[in-house]
Image (tube, rainbow, N blue to C red; front, side, top):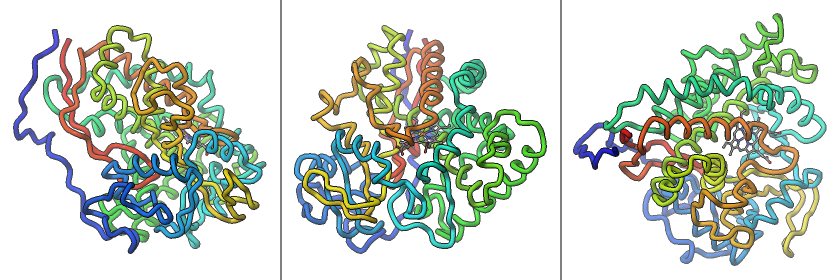
Amino acid sequence: MAADTFSFENHPALERPKVTAREPMHPGYTETYGEVKPAAELDLATLDVVDPEVWRQGKFWDRLERLRKEDPVHFTPDSFVGPYWSVTLYEDIMAVDTDHKRFSSSWEYGGITLGPPLEDFEMPMFIAMDEPRHSEQRKTVQPAVAPNMLKDYEPLIRTRTRAVLDGLPVGEPFDWVDRVSIELTGMMLATLFDFPQERRRELTRWSDIATNMHNPDICPGGEAQWKQEMMGCLTTFMGMFQERGASENKGDLISLLAHGEKTRNMTPMELLGNVILLIVGGNDTSRNTMSASVYALNKYPDQYAKLKADPELIPNMVSETIRWQTPLSFMRRTALEDVTIRGKTIKKGEQVAMWYVSGNRDTTFWENPEDYDIERKNARQHLSFGFGVHRCVGNRLAELQLKILWEELMARYDHIEVLAEPSFTSGAFVRGYTWMPVVLHPK
Ligand code: HEM
């Protein structure tokens, strides 16, 4: 029997974490930390999507929708990341993502996030490399997430998931993000790296720091603190890299890099880059999908009821959640030559954001894309893992983690209830949750 509604007045778990007030990232962002204007009131010629505050407040949807309708290949002349193009339709995103000969991912131009590269802190990583170097390094780490490894991991993921779920309070509010999403992804990452489990929150910290240099809630010391913490990460992993290189290859990500023909002689900054890639790749994305699944099923109770009636729907629910959430909103590319799309010429050297989050809402591809529909037939055709040579190497692992989480959750509890609107990450790149109070209802 499901418990009836609980009452939790003044419960500390319901206290929303404060957000530090901060200066707008750009003089043009006059609305920052105040009212974010609706897209309809903005001048299309200068319309900008990357203001971090717009993302924290969840008010980017109408901007992307306006671009899809009125200017699907759009140039923003001025923003805190400089001038950039936005590609917003499904078909065009696919075209750019699969055209790696004309659109580069390389770190030399700024890699896969918008803005110029940090001049004195170059961190090459294979997601931000072009062929042939990209594929050589990708192949080195791929065995850690290959289908046979996933088979081996499955019982371990299940045992850990059970332990985390069994340790949760029932009928008592708690923060899902911290107690479950961060815990489970941290454990998984520690396993992939063969990193001490008791130190797994260090991995979470490096992941948070890596994408939040300008966020005073995470990195109040700005660039100087960011570099210092990144160097701390390098020191830790350099030690492990050398140790594992000198012993037998155990198949974890660090051993694979330390023994790989194309990676064993990496420079320290390249090691750091690849470690950060694997930490962020394996952490933020899965973590935010775990939170998104709970949030979406609460927003769409009819879908939750369907799932409870038929747990066979879990795998498709996972894909639909990844589409609906789009944990990485975009990837950046740099044009290697002039390219014309829909009559607009992107000039050589210009940066382009492929807005996956927009392609996943494109009505020219999806039927009712705004709806969260766990029976959506083509859910797995979402853009959230990217396409082409850089398509997410961990996509099957992420799906497996999510599937196990929901199988175990449904086996234990009648349902999980979200008690307040969650708080969201600020910034346009990682689309996620910082806090989401929930309560578990017993069966
Ligand atoms: C729902 C979860 C996930 C999402 C949405 C996601 C999304 C993405 C995206 C959008 C890309 C870039 C594609 C491109 O540039 O075309 C990518 C690449 C990558 N992801 Fe994931 N990811 C997820 C989970 C994971 C996990 C669990 C791992 C850990 C092993 C991982 C590791 C990577 C790596 C290493 C790359 C670089 C691949 C390359 O450049 O060849 N990801 N991911």
